[in-house]
Amino acid sequence: MQWAVATYDTAFGYVSAHGAPLLDLLDPQPDERVIDLGCGTGVSTADIAARGADVIGIDESLEMVNAARSEHPHLSFAVGDAHDFTISEPCDAVFSNSALHWMTRDPSAVISRVHAALRPGGRFVAEMGGAGNCAELIAAVQTAWRVFGLPEPELPWYFPTPAEYATRLEEGGFVVRLMEYFDRPTRLAECPDGAADWVRLYAPELIAEVPPELAGPLLDRVNELAAPALRRESGWMADYVRLRFAAVRKPGGDELVQPQAPPTPHTPPGPHPSQPPHAASAAQTPPAPHTHSAPQA
Ligand SMILES: C[S@@+](CC[C@H](N)C(=O)[O-])C[C@H]1O[C@@H](n2cnc3c(N)ncnc32)[C@H](O)[C@@H]1O
Image 1 (cartoon, rainbow, N blue to C red):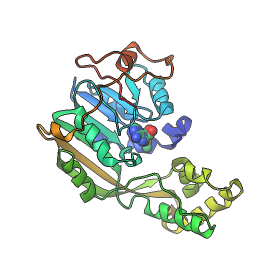
Image 2 (image 1 turned 180 degrees about the vertical axis):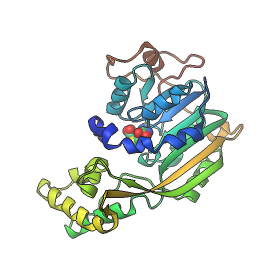
Image 3 (image 1 turned 60 degrees about the vertical axis):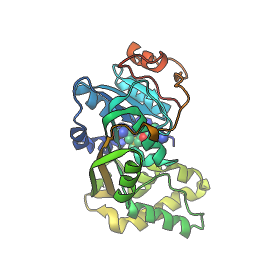
């Protein structure tokens, strides 16, 4: 997935704005070590740091990490895939906002890596798209593709039910303390062309697979199909459905973690001009007590 990093904070600002209560659920304490998994441009990472925690943001997108580093040069960020990251020292909490549903390859592997990253009793606090998320938007996309005689689009998200995700967490060695499942109709303030813009921003790979001359008419049809459910006088709404949970790593349970090769430091493709010494050492030096090392990609 190629993120439109330049427009992310304005076009997707609501992703982070809606994360605010999640931060309260995390309740990071001064000097706690916290990972922000799928940190994007680092907005939540900065909020966690502002509460005094020692936080590292991890994201698989180099573009996102570079944007996060330049916006928050005093914080640590590393490029890494949530499916196979490691850290040198167990941390107190893993936080994730609006990112787990993008980690589609193996959701249980992500949970397993989070488990391995946490100390026993450590917290996993996250919000993600839940079953039925964007159902009207997705139905409009699927219908439009069918109408144009295109193959069923492969959607890039994983939207589990609460029962399914709670089961994965329990099987992964967590006690689920809170699991909320709720509608969150969200104004698409930065999508003047409504559902079509939403597809352009969130699922550009679907458009990339379409003959260029079809893209415009196809997206017009998506708008026509989605409008009755999602267009209001005040503008377009997205039919978001969220899962928000807080889980705790059970004491023990190390046997759940698959043996891993010893961590090898991640070497970024090149030094970032605004990367502070702390982040550089986090990414490049061998593990030190109370220091995050970089995830393995
Ligand atoms: C919608 S953004 C959310 C960003 C941020 N948490 C926020 O609240 O603004 C999803 C993020 O998840 C990241 N992501 C997707 N798959 C990932 C993976 N397998 N490992 C790590 N990060 C991933 C994307 O690169 C993107 O930055």
